[in-house]
Length: 337
Picture 1 (cartoon, one colour):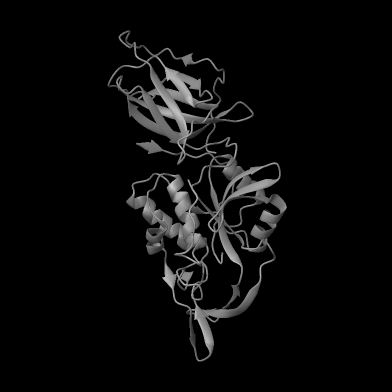
Picture 2: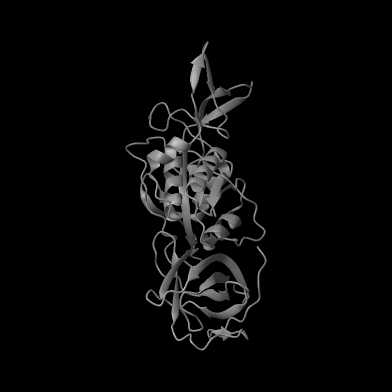
């Protein structure tokens, strides 16, 4: 049973597309020593529970997170500690076969502990080490989003591929072909010499499997597809359209352990268009972008943005180049949290 009462303060929420494209904080004692409450505990407890905080996907230990052990029935704090370099915290005040709530906190520079995830466990002395997957708030080389490449199946499927990588990061075992089945799509066609197609905010234009018959999609259809997949997998996460998020907000997301699907240009140059189609059911023109591309932003440090590029894998891009491209295309992005 997992809960993720995440952790973002002052953020507007964004969205993302194309391929040819706080929660209440709690002041706690941040001493490295474990703190004990006045809760009456049976002296029969002589076992040690070890909680290891690990990053989604990579399962690597995460250091310097606050971990609190709560009584399952009363929700009263029993012990708390700070994860060591292997992500481990040891709790002595536990009773075999009893349930406990484990709450993971991000420790801010101010000293505040901000809740980021929670899980209920039953202490089994035969398996005293419990791994809890959570957000990595201090990645050294970017979040460990798995590399998923779009080719050869999806010459115009960077959005679907990037979304697949994010879902895989959170432990959803699904491939890009299956994710594509969930994505709303609509044909692009010509009638009486006029080209027609969908609103990219409502459906993918064309077929991402076709080199010359696939275009792109904006965030809302991707969010719709992701949330259907997450619901079917009984996941506590939900996709969110965060279109129009600022540079600072995107950086805050990845620094809080959340990868971001963003829309940029495939060549990092100025967006270019060629012709237009009439959006079905309207008289509105949609200018057709030639160089849209979707990538996953996974880190930021020293003026470099780390991305998972579904055409190339892990890359580092100059921050000015990355954010200029992102903003010129309309600041489309989405997250799963």
